[in-house]
Image 1 (cartoon, rainbow, N blue to C red):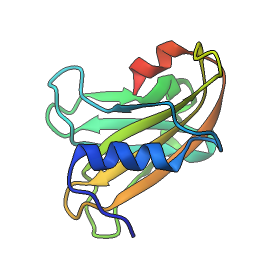
Image 2 (tube, rainbow, N blue to C red):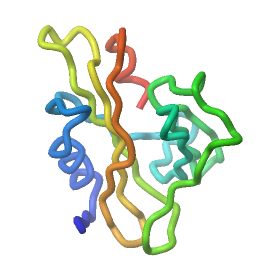
Image 3 (tube, helix red, strand yellow):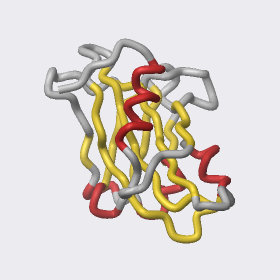
Length: 137
């Protein structure tokens, strides 16, 4: 089990894990666009590769990398840590194409705010993923 104390630890972990079998070129820490919060609940429909983060500060929601079109409420699971907490800092690692003009894969990673455990939730290959996905972490 790997633990981290800071957002920098999470970013380093995301970079080390890779995305879809590719090295990570860019890591974006998740920050709520409405309140600037960095603590989230995480809900996912992993078979559909859809992930939503729920801000603990303002209760705003955001689908990571535009995955909302695949999100089906009836098959969504709340992600949780082994310690019992479901509050996380999140970061998304992006693997880019050789020309760095498109995203080829991404991975969602987390740090439990209660115990510091670093986790790897989901990764997926991206088809026709432009660099605008970098701003949708």
